[in-house]
Amino acid sequence: MLESLPTPCLLVEADRMQNNLDTMASHLDQHEVALRPHLKTCKNIEIARSMLDPRSGGATVSTLAEADYFFEHGIKDLLYAVGIAPGKLSGVADRIAKGMQLTLVLDHPATARAVANAAEQFDCPFRLLLEIDCDGMRAGFKPDSDGLLEAAGILANAGCKVAGVMVHAGGSYLCRDPDGIRDMAARERASAVLAAERLRAAGHELEMVSIGSTPTALLGDNFEGITEVRAGVHVFQDLVMAGLGVCRTDDIALSVLCEVIGHRPHAGQLVVDAGWMALSRDRGRAPAGPDLGYGLVRDLNNGDLGELIVQGANQEHGLIGHRSGQPVDFKRFPIGTRVRILPNHACATAGQHAGYWLLKDHNREPEYLERCAGW
Ligand SMILES: Cc1ncc(COP(=O)(O)O)c(C=O)c1O
Image (cartoon, rainbow, N blue to C red; front, side, top):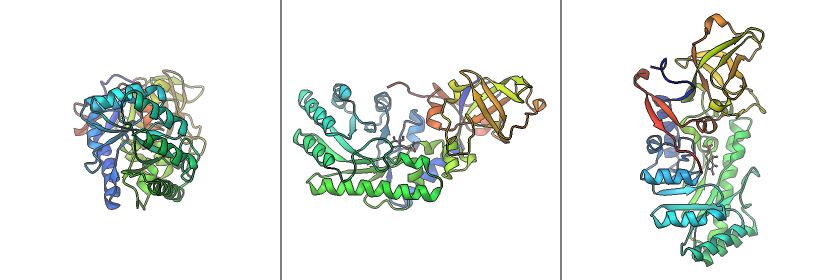
């Protein structure tokens, strides 16, 4: 069946995906903390259902388009985990009026004022988490900042619900080893707990103390004071996670199927019909190493081909060669040979495609699953 799918296309191995979900679930069960899966990686309802944790029931999204798609498919409790743009508040109020239990995040008193004004204008008591920064990587109030309490006060005075705090340790993707990730997990938790303590001391009744990224969720060993963990990449895993030691290369459930369309004797490389449009431009752990180009090449059955990587990517052409610089043996890969590329970053690669082929039962009858798109 893999011989006849149109290339390039995205494949998901159902067994590997289930193993990845089981690994996360058993780790969090052991620590008695709920998962609020981040659905930005899968963007598909069938996969999302297998990720939900009955203890939280809710999910995380990164766009309002995802919120709409998952709400239409029955998931009501949604955390929109990107700082709210004031221009989106009227649309958010419409969604809440339709029954979506949408929680927003913000990290600036000025945004809190915009939310307070919109709450009055649209007669909508928005529900919010205050985003906390634990690693200086992206967004968030410092947990000990005055702005945190100021923003919470503005929201509460406007009748909005300050439901809790949210921390995402994006710095975990840059760690050198599992010990570094464990330190980052400890920092992520400590920042959330400190911010929550300060808000509670100021009189806010918090329901959510939400932390997480795939590395810190899987390697964290203390979740005291935390009500839920967020993770999304764990569903497929990818080469970045394997490079961090968070999973094995053989756990990666996502791959791009493509076909050899040319040989480059002068460069010792194959040409395939998957360029950056199919793989994304994400170079994964190239800066920290190992540099796996635009992805690691596997055979049609996901078998190991050594360190064959996508060394170059044009829009629709991928150039495959040996990491060592040795020329590829063209006799092994005649024109028309199909191979798979494991992704550097699952969210980025999947984001290039409109859907997946889900492989089960020894690849008999792959099932096509759509992905939602846009913002
Ligand atoms: C706010 C937030 N929470 C959770 C996650 C999930 O982390 P991961 O992609 O490592 O699974 C992300 C990912 O970017 C995020 O931005």
